[in-house]
Image (cartoon, rainbow, N blue to C red; front, side):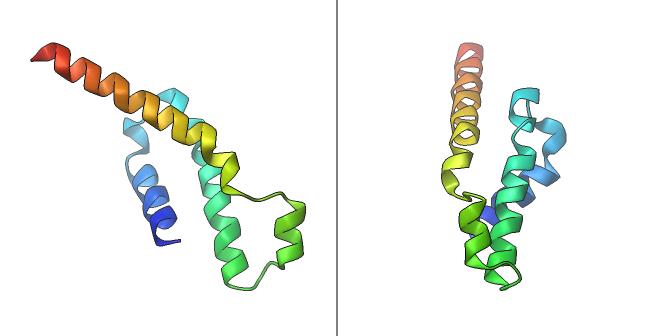
Length: 81
């Protein structure tokens, strides 16, 4: 969970720098972290998590978008050299 918390914190603090396509995933990441936090605090039962089909699989499109943006930025930087 520490890495997910850090990822959400970084996204929140730098939201204004993110591309619009990436910003679309903010709520998905936020929900993912919040549900895990609640589960770990034992305020949501595991059955609820299962019924919500809560899994990292939902974040795969976000990861793909981040990778796409990273390659694009690298390309733009290499063209300026």
